Length: 139
Image (cartoon, rainbow, N blue to C red):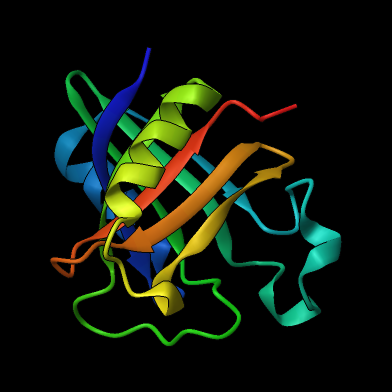
């Protein structure tokens, strides 16, 4: 079932922040570092301890997050919170991605691609809102 939520990006303190939120909200916290992931070989050694995926689930509250890992864009206030569509079928993902990318600045679009964890893409829509997409692989 497709899910809609928010996604938080941190400047190297994702683990600390999500542990704080867990203390405040309770629930179960799952954290994966770059080095623990199937993508570890794609990152330099100084990124291996960064968080590639964290998820806190406490009843109806779900917070998904990671440390900033984009190789060419710079983290700044305003691009650290995204709307997040996840758990979608590949056809749903493509439909949402294609519609939301209409009028978007091409320099902000990370095209949908298959990754080890599923399909992934991101964009900033024509209204300046950042979106992240994750779902089933195309293949």
